[in-house]
Length: 509
Picture 1 (cartoon, rainbow, N blue to C red):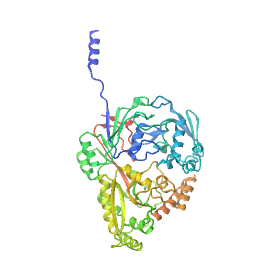
Picture 2: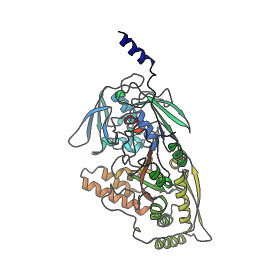
Picture 3: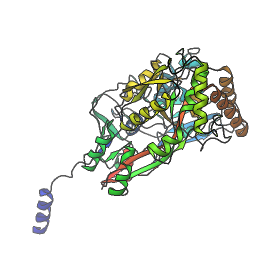
Picture 4: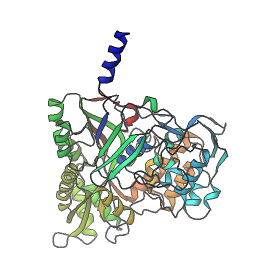
């Protein structure tokens, strides 16, 4: 008895288990945590910690069952039936099939003005709803009962489990609210606090269906536009993870923090959308001159040095099969500049009559370097570039509203298919920042969507890309690598091409 009393007194004197905290540098301030409006990587990371769709991502960013325990697909690939697990919202209410139907109709409703609605256009009647030609109730999705969701597609999409992990496909409870303390979630973490331009704090959700496997109690996301400063915070132990990294510091990181830096080829394109509603930029000669003058090899090999691929197409090489390229790829750079100068002169510009263009870019160190490099390139062809820097949410807002001439942005694929890039150029697409519209391109994309034969579908997508490349609504720059640093305390990190690492799968060593 004395031994038991002594042992119990020792246990009582031990301190409670310390709270585990993960501090993540997210690159920029999230603009919105409403799944209908979230489109950036940092928003996807935060929402991915808070919410779970029909499918979700595993530690290597591969789709696995989420709210749906299982599903069946019809022989023609057009009908998918999802069977939901027993799960609850953080307020205790059951997650139902109706919650998905409500959320998807909301995303597609033109009144919502979702910037990612095109990702759901594969659902039957979805595009007609987005265009305002059909009521949201016409969507080809039926909640057969509380635990069964029947989804009808416009065309076969074997990548649907991947697509259903996206923010736009997440469920919502009735009357959703998006602010700390009032946001109901069905995922691993609750939204505890959001201090704009300072931090977003998430706390473990005890009602999550797999809460017993979640090892980290609190996750802080910090906006780290100043990537140099973020790296200093990582070295000091104030941050455990940081993305992106300042490329100029990668050699130092590799030498002094071996194993911390990760450079991952990804399905992503960095490009300059060209505002086609601007009178000067509506001229194909000017757009072609800008494309010719951009020295992609210099940027990838001499400026950034990440072993990235110069981009002469819109679809990454991992997804492209036909070798679509801008027609001047094999031309030496001096010849390109000479041709660009002739085009600009033909359009009425010259050394004493330069074209002035604004170049909008996020203000992190690498983007500022790239802006200055392009400014020098453009000067060779009688273009005076005025650089304007802004926080990333403001850049996105300007792009969506068409309040720019040239801008720097990038697109990380939502799913592994060429259409995910080309859909950004379809007339009426929320991601069509250039306001590009070509009936032939739209027809080729529509035909590809309705084509069940994979080889014929690929040929139609290639034809669509060739049409867009000839019109040059973008200046493609490079196919991106993702960069991230992971501190020594973090366990469970798995490098992947999406650079998505849900906090649910991580732990503190």
